[in-house]
Image (cartoon, rainbow over all chains, first blue to last red; front, side, top):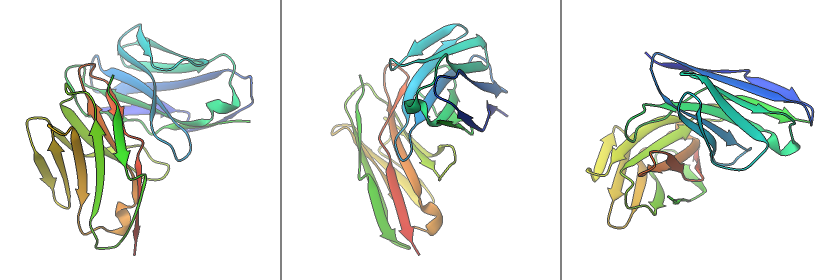
Length: 113
Length: 111
């Protein structure tokens, strides 16, 4: 069966510090991968998605970046965090063909102070 | 691109009542419509979905209806229970294969 992992689960970082969040998927090949951010009490904002290694599409301009160094690994990064980067970050995967269910990871709660 | 509107943003019901959440979409090419439930502090999880070749789908106390002509779909929960309290998101997936989510509905079921 397929599983999706995210770490860390929680993170408290000072403004201006770097960020690296990691997501890995097991039990499937060539998944579509997604990064979402959810501010407190708000909806799901799509940040990045990837259909293959090295292929990243950005949905919103920001100080975040994403990389996919391996087929089932998706990394979200920032060189300098802003207060507005605080939120609940969710990684998700879906099968590569067609329109199908997304499977979400457990999330990382990031607080920028 | 696709635009999904979801209403209401908050829904408060008494245990045992029915709850209905409605979504509209703009892209006529969309053909997959999932509903996710997100409990506080947890990940969203799929509870039911429907494809455009079907008008209605049921799974025990939950059902989804789709009106392609009007471009709207709805989630129906009958005999609500306190454990149904959560945020519910609708989504529509069109030609880009990337889902567009609604803004969410916070459902509160009072015992």
